[in-house]
Length: 246
Length: 246
View 1 (tube, rainbow over the protein chains, first blue to last red):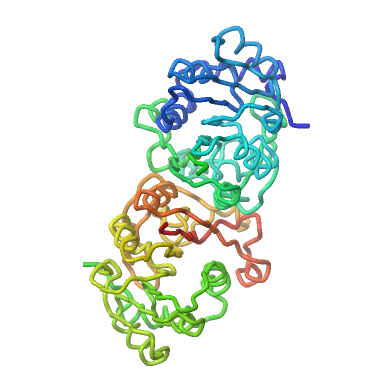
View 2: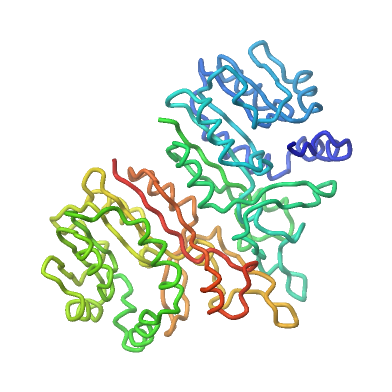
């Protein structure tokens, strides 16, 4: 059974605050970068894996998608999506994205924002996604960057000098793929570290052609909102990949 | 003019010692990993960019290559290659790999081991390589991993605890693409940092299909030869990419 941290009451409330904040790195960095890579959605069938509150599903429908299927493991998320971001051609389903093979529809775009690092069996998921895509269909996803998922020392991984100024980001455990437990609002949030090469090779092995890779880095504006972090110390926080089934 | 550090007498002598050592990470890690990705060379035309002493050119010829062109900026390297690793169907040329467009021959494989990080204009090089490849031709190259090329604090980038044990690898300046000067036997060796996404996107933009990505990590044997470095602190040292012109 996949961990469903998002239905933990404390987690859900705290997470909601962050996601509705306009100053989160999600809003400032990840969302603009991934959404700039969206293909033309006019008349297309789309699925959003880990759709959360359904913000993006609604945008996809507004951009002309013929149908949108939002999938999320969290019952609370799906309830809010149905309440606030429902349109006629959007369906929200409360299930694990790893069960996507149980859906009968085929898609032109499968989209997923910051959810794949929660999935234990990456190859199994990617193989199922490949099967669910139409020919020429696109997989567009973001995840925490492997430089971020690698570390086991939970929390702030910046090394500081004696005077408190930052020296750099402390990278360790990169080679050790597998589960990571961290405190993120609550204890024991589980995610999975995979190396960059493993991620690419799995996509390629499943049949995908890699089209674009992005590691969005904070703008000056975003940096200002993160005090003490000068450009020198920016590490990639997200990895975004656009891949095509040909 | 491209920097030609390899013809510096002091550098050349020190470098030669390292390259002829069987305990270098080149020999233990990079060479087995990149060479395991070689396509069938029987009857093929091959070029080795930054061929150095010509070890690999000789292996390619022995593996059945029809012709091999070894290119190196260093006159000393080419002289030694001609002296020690010359076969009838191998030609060694003393020139910059960025002039590869001046060669009339087309290739089935363009190979390059740990040299691309010395090249300032990556896109220009990759575009020229693409033009020099036959259809279905392969580019197989390795370079220092972006996690390594990023840092500006020259030398040992491992952070240590007060007791001298290692805490992790200190990553900084990842976002800042461009020149890095370091001391490697001599002062002022110049190389270029590029992000992972920039490297991938440039290959794709030039027309390549990415086939395999490797970040070889040290075996237990290799680790034993690097005292004090336990598995926890291994970072990727090399990035190896196999790409195809289709």
